[in-house]
Image (cartoon, rainbow, N blue to C red; front, side):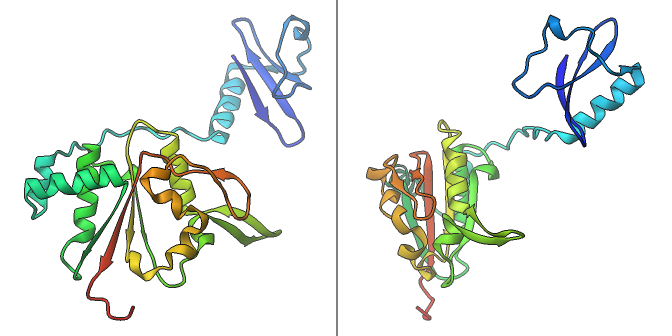
Length: 239
């Protein structure tokens, strides 16, 4: 067994074999322990000391999240939950799958958010909230929160990625499954200000086309497996 232990003063690589436990110093991440390193140990470990060291290393490393099987969700579940005919559902789903984007509009309290999430569930065929991202637009929402921008930290300002950038990256890393970005009050935000140079890429015909981001200059694209569902309030007279 070979691993790297991050100490206070130096990096230490240790190895464990059937005869004894040894700690070797002076190696880096790229180093490979070989026969020439045999006999260069500086500390002998007992079994208890070795186990304690292993516990420290495990605690210092990020634990992988356990996958929890999501509850299945079918078209019949959608039709049972949402007041909609099957023909209307098929039409709505086809529009979303072809255009990649739809907007649901209606008066407050008619269930737009409820319906949007269950439409996503029905296409995913499971209730997997890890593949759904929900935001609400407002008049002060900007490109810096949505895509990327400079934010203050202890040392001044640092370029940080926004919620849409991070969700697109998540979808890119899982191209075989659909992801859904749900935007509430989409008509309250200034879309050109929020999406910036990505506004064109929202269209289905321009998915996977790359443009340079404003601050970082990174060549970025919106993946084909990301679907956008917007919701707008038709009773809002403040706009």
